[in-house]
Image 1 (cartoon, one colour):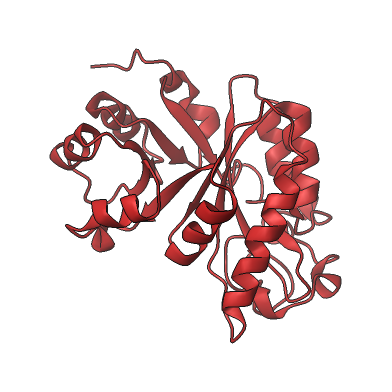
Image 2: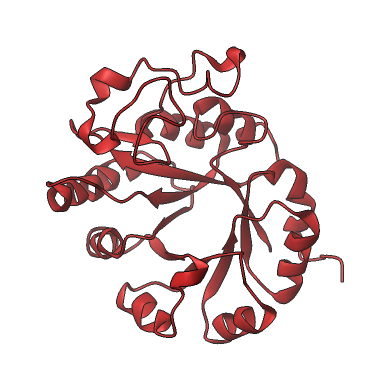
Length: 252
């Protein structure tokens, strides 16, 4: 079965990484996976946001890991997208869990790198809080943890060994020693950038026994091509338009 991951929800029609976007995903029957980004605030609240800074997707400013949730919880995370989303706030992970449980959505959790002088302790706290919160999920919910940050993935391996981890690679950073890195982190899943990805590279990764998901694919023909090459899943901003590819019968 080909997997379609709704990348930050449905960001073409709703503001990314908001409850409104994830609810929209849940209302689509055949959409089974969402991808979210988790960061930790200075006062140790897990929130869903992609960037290290609040500036792009909220109407406030500041570095996430140096900001207090109390100071940002009422900021709009949707006004930048459209006036009708003015009341959308930066979600907490606990708020997301309610939606995931309600709609039976599987979730890929991308762990964002922790910045600042206290990054090691904050990274450990992020994993600890994640472990506590994952216990609130329904038993049938599948979880995949991914990150570019090897430290976070190693901490996740130690604290959450039962949860599969995926190593994220940009195209320019996919060096010949990739397999040593992935094996060191105890992972069997790779998330690789679409840019520059060839059929030969796909075949090499898959024949080594790894699950391969590709990001971020918004072209329908390219998505179909990748599935024909044998990739297991794609991350896309238009999941609602690509669900027909979730069957194994892609067009040759």
